[in-house]
Image 1: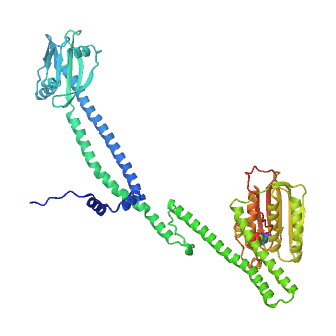
Image 2: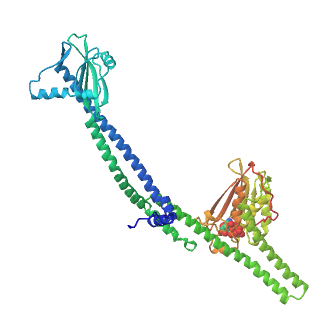
Image 3: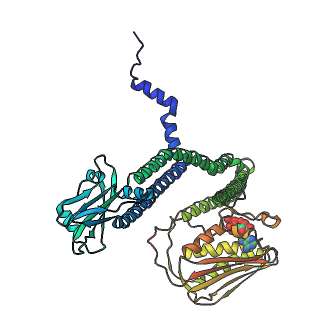
Length: 517
Ligand code: ATP
Ligand code: MG
């Protein structure tokens, strides 16, 4: 008994498919891959183009070849009238004189039909008969055509071979009598040529499509190659080496723009990481100082204090440090509330000059301690719709900075007045302090950003004050700009709109509001 191939079970079929084409997941990844999709669109476009070109070419060729047959038929039509005439109601052919003429007459006699004016057939060739002789009514209709007018038609013989037929009439010996004349030429050659060329073209088409797929695959691979290397380079960038940059290829194309954007993104990320790292250091430093101090005070109370006064003093000092600790924590909480949009503004008409004088008053003591001249120049009547608590905070932060970053003997000016634009009021805080380098200026409003140099390192701070300032100005629909010359001083200028903007209802102000972050 011969071994017969058993039909494959479903599991075996799957196993064979997997061996040949990979797992279904792999296949899906391949088909969804950019390279495959690029190649597919290229091949679809190319195939449609080739088919359209083929059809156009076929149509043009057919028109051209059919036109050639028509020209030959017209020549025959002109020639036959010189060779045949009607005598005694019968067609009479001239005798050819040489071999050439015999050939011409033989050609004319291949496909023709002559009938009289009543539709009686007078003479016709066998080939014409196989195409079907025209009916009497058809002949009558043709005989009524105006002089010189003819009609073309295509007819097929018993085997399906097509002929182009030309029908019209010719005048008899007495000119009023017309005779029906039809002649034909085979279209078989031209149609065969068209069919042959079309078949060859469409047989060759799959080869062209296969070739174009291969080329499409190679081109798509080349175009996407750099993308893979970019992806590989991106993979090497981790949190610990954010300074790595993907090298530009210098082609100035979309991919270079992508690399550029990617590098800028990692640069920004790296900056944010650095800020967060610096912030953790600053926060731990800021929190450690009061904590160490509290611990010292408590140790004093526990081990060395003897009198109630000594206990009281240690407790009071510890309480002050606890107060400082909670103010830092409150500042952080407040900023996060402000930036997440949870902080409400309580806007009411506010005289900016009055607020500024209050704050200047409060800062006179710290300014005098540092031997600074603090002056206010107020134009009265600058009323803006604003939240008093926030404007207090804004001015306190600016003044605190001016006092902190101005060395002893310097000056601080506060100016309130109308701005150039009548719809705004202006608040300026200027100092003759250490100034800010141009490279640091774009960052000073960033959260936790602190300028690091010999002068500023001596001053404590979290780098949060100006983040508050920037948020408050923005929340009031105002603008802030800063001009600074290192070593000479800094000027912050704030413009606040005089008209209240329509604001969405906001939640109530949280109870703890920190005046000076
Ligand atoms: P905080 O205000 O949170 O206690 P800070 O004063 O360091 O800390 P910001 O008020 O946000 O933080 O200021 C950011 C940085 O901008 C400061 O660290 C300082 O280097 C610089 N800066 C701000 N104001 C001035 C100024 N008037 N003169 C010079 N440098 C300034
Ligand atoms: Mg500050």
